[in-house]
Amino acid sequence: MAKNTGNDYRKGAVKNRSQTQTGAGNWVKRDAETGRFMDVKSDKKPFKGVSKE
Image (cartoon, rainbow, N blue to C red):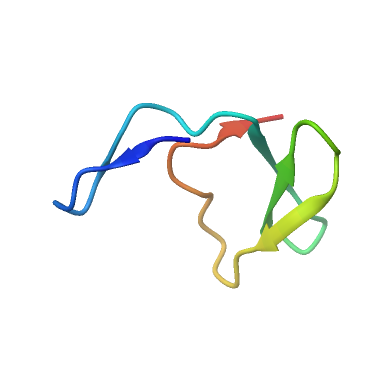
Protein backbone atom coordinates (compact mmCIF):
# COMPACT_ATOMS: atom_id res chain seq x y z
CA MET A 1 0.00 0.00 0.00
CA ALA A 2 1.01 3.59 -0.39
CA LYS A 3 2.40 5.31 2.67
CA ASN A 4 0.44 8.16 4.22
CA THR A 5 2.72 11.10 5.02
CA GLY A 6 0.31 12.93 7.34
CA ASN A 7 0.40 15.98 5.07
CA ASP A 8 -2.78 15.22 3.04
CA TYR A 9 -1.00 13.21 0.33
CA ARG A 10 0.37 9.73 -0.24
CA LYS A 11 3.85 8.76 -1.30
CA GLY A 12 3.81 6.11 -4.02
CA ALA A 13 1.04 4.21 -5.76
CA VAL A 14 -1.49 1.98 -4.06
CA LYS A 15 -0.47 -1.63 -4.82
CA ASN A 16 -2.75 -4.64 -5.45
CA ARG A 17 -5.69 -2.37 -6.25
CA SER A 18 -7.34 -1.13 -9.43
CA GLN A 19 -10.42 0.91 -10.19
CA THR A 20 -13.07 0.99 -12.86
CA GLN A 21 -16.00 3.27 -13.60
CA THR A 22 -19.58 2.00 -13.34
CA GLY A 23 -22.35 2.78 -15.80
CA ALA A 24 -23.67 5.43 -13.39
CA GLY A 25 -20.29 7.18 -13.42
CA ASN A 26 -19.13 6.22 -9.91
CA TRP A 27 -15.68 4.68 -9.36
CA VAL A 28 -15.31 1.21 -7.85
CA LYS A 29 -12.09 -0.02 -6.21
CA ARG A 30 -11.16 -3.67 -6.84
CA ASP A 31 -8.72 -6.02 -5.09
CA ALA A 32 -6.26 -7.34 -7.69
CA GLU A 33 -5.68 -10.67 -5.92
CA THR A 34 -9.30 -11.78 -5.40
CA GLY A 35 -11.08 -9.58 -7.96
CA ARG A 36 -13.68 -8.55 -5.37
CA PHE A 37 -15.08 -5.03 -5.29
CA MET A 38 -13.99 -3.18 -2.15
CA ASP A 39 -15.39 0.34 -2.17
CA VAL A 40 -17.55 2.69 -4.26
CA LYS A 41 -17.13 6.46 -4.25
CA SER A 42 -20.28 8.54 -3.95
CA ASP A 43 -18.90 11.42 -6.01
CA LYS A 44 -17.83 11.10 -9.64
CA LYS A 45 -14.09 11.58 -8.95
CA PRO A 46 -11.67 8.60 -9.14
CA PHE A 47 -9.67 7.30 -6.16
CA LYS A 48 -6.27 8.95 -5.71
CA GLY A 49 -3.20 6.80 -6.37
CA VAL A 50 -5.14 3.74 -7.61
CA SER A 51 -4.45 2.52 -11.16
CA LYS A 52 -7.32 2.49 -13.66
CA GLU A 53 -8.37 -0.59 -15.62
